[in-house]
Image (cartoon, rainbow, N blue to C red; front, side, top):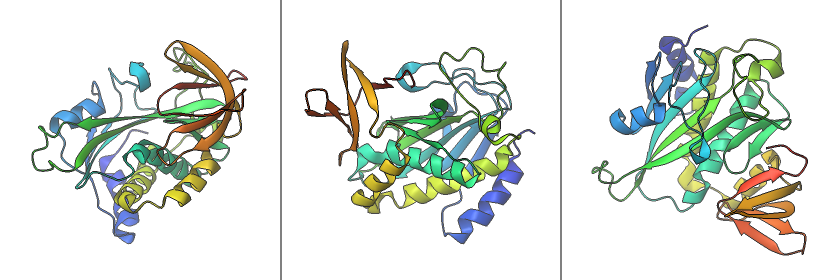
Length: 270
């Protein structure tokens, strides 16, 4: 089933209007180089860009994101904060929580977020997040605030043969649930959670956020390897600090905080 803008909008109006949330303007394309790039060049605050296929989709650290046609979700949302958020470093993590809650609503269980921006199910990657800021010179009407492009890629109905080029263990939502997924409905559920969480982000309760993160954190209390600047360390994940940095207890007992590092499970995942 191909994506249908009319159907997505019908789902959205029913869900978002009930919660007094903004209803975004949708742009749906058969093929784009990148939904993030399109929004950077053409979007205004609140716009959503969706593509059936991307030719230059990117993941974290510039990795190529495989994008078979009409099977997955390639989505970008342009979101603007009128004032710089107090907890800016938690935006990406909040988006991750929005995604896993949306997937739960679709019937998925056993999934979670791998710090800082990947969605996993039972040690297999299901999706990722790429957030980019828009220069204030491009957004003259929002000089004191922050404009972000929030890109999301999710494996939904992709078959094993279509995913042969992926260089890490992965899974699709349809494989786990044992059925083809209505992507129109999923997109609406996903946008409902995203917009709700972003619209209330400036009133974020930090303690509640940390508790919720721990609930969905696939690395919590796990033995991991930390790769940073050609150095490798080992330790146990102890959660997040108030700035969204991952806390790792090294073998020596020292607690270390990382804002940027590659974290791999010692048992070979991630």
